[in-house]
Length: 116
Length: 115
Image (cartoon, rainbow over all chains, first blue to last red; front, top):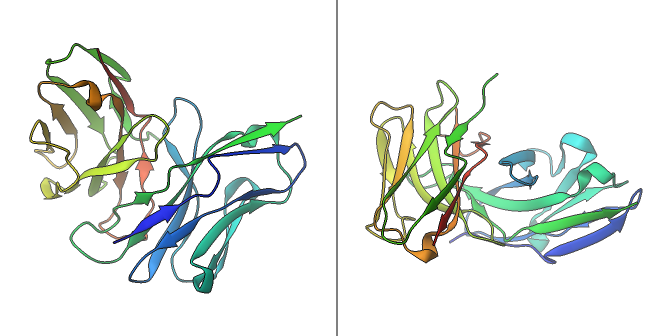
């Protein structure tokens, strides 16, 4: 079975500071990993995804994430936070097996607050 | 271009009422997913369609939940005899192919409140 753990339901940073959102996954087969962002009253938007190519993945809005198999982690980072980054972030895993290809298993989310 | 749309955006139902939630996926997308997002939680899988075929309904919480996609495009999620625990945001997502690596495009969701 697949699962995702996001450490820290709330993260607060100052504008311009490093953003680090943590995600650990559990999967019995090679995973595909995703980070989504959700703004209030909106659907989820894909930030980036890991699909077994490069372990360092660059996404939109200056975000990136590194797949570390030994640590079963896929942490999301951004060197310098912007006020517009304030949102809820979800880490998700999927596997290439079974009848429901693409089914996503989500973490509980991390609410990012950016202070001026 | 047009994204995934869902209607209604908000629905208030009295306990015991039936509701129908609609999803219009991106045109031509083969795969369609429904997720349920309870307050303060991540989305949880409900069901999956590939074209008109419902290939996985293992996430539906009870037999009160029913989904269909009769012509392989628009999908409807129906909840019969709603209960308070059904209150959640229901998200629909579509994807161009039945491949795990493809991005899922999410709609804005329908917020269901059962009173």
